[in-house]
Image (tube, rainbow over all chains, first blue to last red; front, side, top):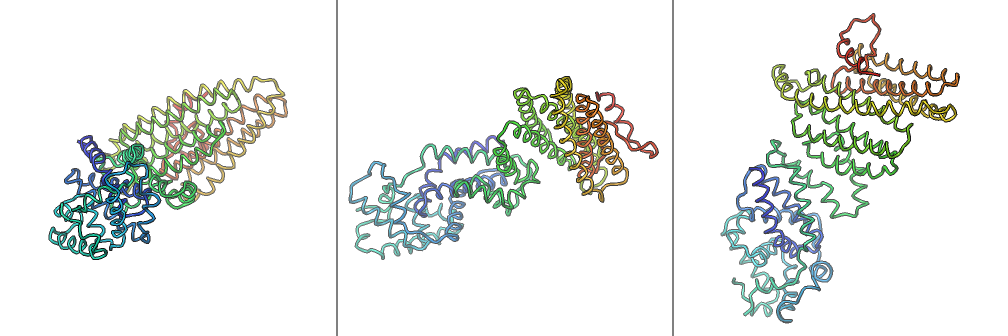
Amino acid sequence: MEKELERQFLEAYEQYADALFRHCCFRISDREIAKDLVQEAYMKTWVYVVEEKEIQNIKALLYRILNNSIIDYFRKKKAVSLDTMMEDTGFDPAEKEIGDPETRLLGKEVMKLLSKLDNQYREIITLRFVDGLTPKEIAEVLHTSPNVVSVRLHRAIEKLRSQAPELFSDISFEE
Amino acid sequence: MKNLQDILNRIPLKPLQKEEKNAMRTRLIDFMNVHPSLSTKRPALSSFFFEMFSVRLLANALPAALVLALVVGGSISFAAEGALPGDLLYPVKVSVNESVRGAIAISSEAKTEWNSELIERRLQEAEELANEGKLDEDTRSEIESNIETHFADIETRISAEGDNDRAAEVSSRLETALRGHEQILLEISKGGGKGESITLAAKVAASLEDVSEAEALAQTLRSKAEAISKTRTEAEISVSSRVNGQMKKSAENSLRSAEKRISEARKLLKKNKATLNAEISAQIEAQMQAAEESITEGKTRVEAEASGEAFVLFQEAQRLADEARLTTRAARDFDVRISIRGIDISTAMTLDAGEEDDEEEDQED
């Protein structure tokens, strides 16, 4: 039985590590620390799994634990501007440019605006629009109800929009 | 109309590279091995965070020199020194403390010393576990295979160095250590140790299960001791059959070592005298005395230009001093009484130390 648990868990590593990493990068400015946090999240999740002796919805669990780690990280550290991230560690200059220049520019703009949001709003926007989690999944991650998630999401979108109405005028927030 | 999700998805953040992902996977697997799913130990939530400060994580976030300073000089590594296999801090003890000290040992000589120390450490862990009734088969085999590795390393180095003096000294110390620990394990397995205050019946039941493990390990130690005894004897013979001029130097070195060991043993005895009972104190005193007599004897041999004999006597003195130390530690840590070669207190005091000693004496020399 123990081999099975190990195997499943490592599969979850292969499957979600990249997405979790990307999620981290969206929220903090340091790529190296992002790696640490993801590593830490997996380790903590493993300990949890060992206690419970089973894996139920590992995705939500991983996100939740990662989210907590990120929150802890912010508590200890002043938030660093996203500009720094884009210039230094996060951005991949080598990566093949995706999409048209206009979209890319837009992306940078949106990132900047995102960084100005409250942690809670940034968190929920990232989970929804970067990780693509459904409101129900987000509810599991945040340990709250889908209703609360919807409300918060709505407020976050409004906040974001209000920062640059013209910019967002032709951006849809639907799937 | 553009979609926020699309826009965000297209932002080119550098993803996890293959090597990075693999490196993290390796660390994760290491971590999982320390927390196996079948472990009955349930880490408390607070110890959770302890592990989070483990070096691998620190090492990613901080410059290496800082990590070393934090951990080696800091309370985590200090706290880890007492850790046993299965404890949360045990990986810190092994992967950090021990690898740092191992790295510092550069010369072949130093490495041999360090390997001997590692054997000591593993054996102490085995004894403590056995004493608590927690020495299971897996842990025992693990400890055994570690000892094998260190042992083999020592033997290789000894033969590579080709230095008979060193070979004699190292193998002598190792032999004494192995025999001493063998005794300790046997005593513990007989239920002679200070365990937690559980009922006698429970203690017996627990010790019966471990009896096989502690005894098995003791067996291994015995055969290893015999193996190294041969090495030791050969080395001693080589050394003592040298031409007198060369011999003198060897004898002098051996004398210095012996005196050092004796003083260490005395210090240890002094430190722990209060906690030892009268018989054991007397036994250790007798061992120390025998060691000192051996030295005196050896000195007269040196004067009589019989340095070869002197060398052997100084070697003997070292062994006696080591035994005294082990006896002290066995009494202090496990409340057991060992006697490696039957150095007994005077016949005036009646004690049952006789039985094991007789067997041992037959095997010695």
